[in-house]
Image (cartoon, rainbow, N blue to C red; front, side):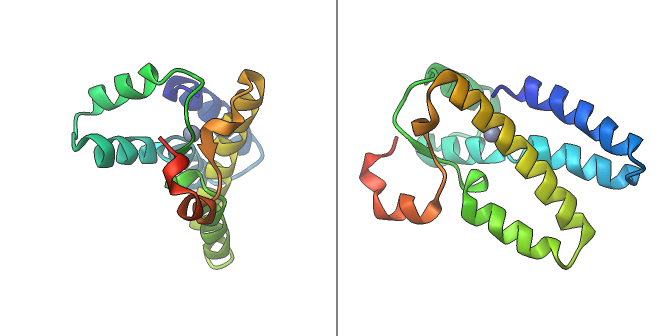
Length: 136
Ligand SMILES: [Zn+2]
């Protein structure tokens, strides 16, 4: 999903959380984590292309289209979400980071189901390590 849609959905859901008496700071943490989980796209681009230019990274990702070989994006994996969920037991900060990342992941998955391209993402880091050569 494009960053602008994550931003719009994140703002809407943060406001809903605020209406349910959730502390403004945690609403903001939710919003930030629901957007910046996509930093791994940039990380992936940097590792592949050895280029730090954010604009070129964005253009490169868009040029892949909606149907391509699977990509492993570390923050979007079940293992990373699991790690954050464990930390959430010890801190409300991580709880809202977890909610933001989960919200983001769910919106990504809904869009991928709609586009029939769930296969374009590896959801497991362990799976990625086992089948490395099949990825973009
Ligand atoms: Zn995403």
